[in-house]
Length: 227
Image (cartoon, rainbow, N blue to C red; front, side):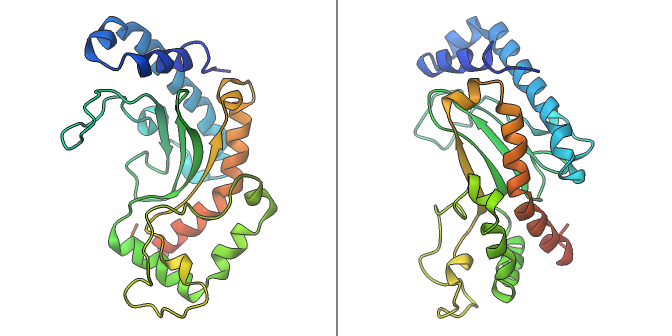
């Protein structure tokens, strides 16, 4: 089984203290080894996710793993490289408009796993809000599943509207569900997780726990004729 401890973790740890082009160029061979290890890990993970979500069949790490180079054009932070490696596993790959499973490994920061839909287009967001307004139980039932609650505590609470979205009554019992701009769930991966031999089976279990959310979101998009 590919491990992240040989190259990925040590490379990212050193990069965090040496985030500049000179150091990166001197250690490009190391980066390439770390990148290969991470992609090999994702390639081993994907078939196990397919057992839960058959729509992930046919994709590989190259479709899902993000580049390490940062886009600094509009950022005050001009460090050129991400100090993490991440993959967004979705039908069709990381640029898919469908809900996904996300893995983010950052040894000097916070490593996370989870998924759902992030920064979606307005028609997709409207379709979800309409569905959750009409049948909120679909979402609430997922949140109440023991397997889900083992890893997650509801939706990500950042970047929400402060009031009811336009077109929905403010006194709706579950109005908080409609204030979200992103329907994602996240759980933290500890240092022991990302360095341990049980990382892959843990990610498989996390994906299995949150898959009902992805399935619901993708069904909403399909029923609305958006995908």
